[in-house]
Amino acid sequence: MTSSQEELLPGTHRALLHRIAVAQAEGRAPSLVAAVVRGGQAVWHGARTSVDGHGPDETVQYRIGSITKTFTAILVMRLRDEGLLDLGDPLEKHMPGTGAGEATIAQLLAHTAGLAAESPAPWWERTPGTLRPELSDVLGEQPLLHPVGRRHHYSNPGYTVLGALVEELRGAPWDEVLRSEILEPLGLHRTSTQPQAPHAGGWAVHPWVDAMLPEPLEDLGRMAPAGQLWSTTGDLARFAAFLAAGDDRVLSAESVREMRTPAAPAEAADVLDGAAYGLGLQIQRRDGRLLVGHSGSLPGFLANLTLSVEDDVAAVLLANCTSGPLLGAVGADLVRIVAEAEPRIPEPWSPLREVDPSVLELAGQWYWGTNGYGLRVNADGLLALGPLTGSGRRSRFRSNGDGTWTGLESYFAGELLRPVRRADGSLSHLDLGSFVFTRQPYDPEAPVPGGVDPEGWRGIG
Figure 1 (cartoon, rainbow, N blue to C red):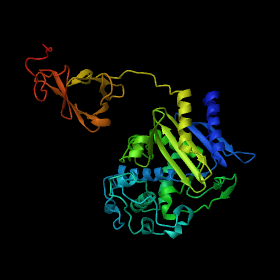
Figure 2: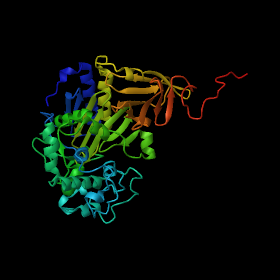
Figure 3: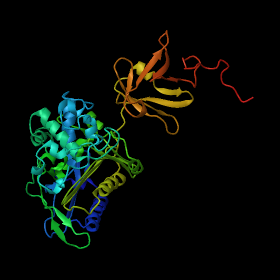
Figure 4: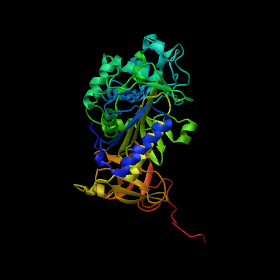
């Protein structure tokens, strides 16, 4: 992908370059390359390097580590959407005898299956995958460290299991399925399981001396679905655009939105940090923004993809060092710089193409007890319910085609909104998951649960 750097203002361009320059210098990274995505395409590319001459560009491969997990999660979601599995299925249904069979597919995706964080020794990231030829070598004798479903515990073996599940249900190696179902449709031609020139070498930087040591580049074998991939900022920019909007050739926007939704119970420290985990995606609240994406690291490499769907801005960063620059913080800063300097311009307002009188009748002010709510009919055909003042429960609702509506988010997600009419056909009230919404607070003409005092409203005397 060719970056359209002229699409950003010069001041924004310099602020982005300054941020990655500081990250590379203070993080002591041999090289650091970055891209910013807006409106579905890369709009900025920058790089800093310690090597004289031509710096890395958007075609140079780096190892992306655990960003690989997001690709594996997409393959699993495709199986779900095709009806080959359900996220609530226990692993045992599809792969008996693993020792972790009571965990569900969703729990594996969200790192709540109770599995260990790492495979048994030796350290899998710096040793050949041939040392762990079977799934049992990855899971060990006691795969479960925690009760299934009770806590979020990041697990590399868990994604190895998911890769094996893909192979079992597709009848083909994970890397072949990955290429045919994700890489080729999205045009990610510089993403691969093995390094392809031009690619960066991986380095360890001494913590107390400005000196470097080359890191081994191991084929992870069975562990590949957890962290094997190599990619470029150009390819990951395309991938970030996909994670924002979906692509029906790979995964629908609705299924990608499901991946971006928190799916794991957060630890206390995560609550304080504003961090959560979806289905193959990390989620974090930072600088007042909801950010999704994934980080990655393997000996010699760091990677990060950060996306703000609301701002329509994403950032990708790659570095070839084992530790150093905090790429998650840098990615969040790149998103913030663009979002604040050049905020997203909304689409022009446009009215509904048609106005259904029965839907129009629902709009306006409603009361749940004494709490005032407004119900708006939007041009996208959805209903939007929210409090008239202050904070409170909000949700959008999608028509079911029979006069009822289903909640799409928050407290009312999946709940049924049903307009209730009187014998003469006039609108009486709304029933929302047993809550009665009336046009007036405790309307005596509506069937308010518990009834309404016949003497009505009164003063203190």
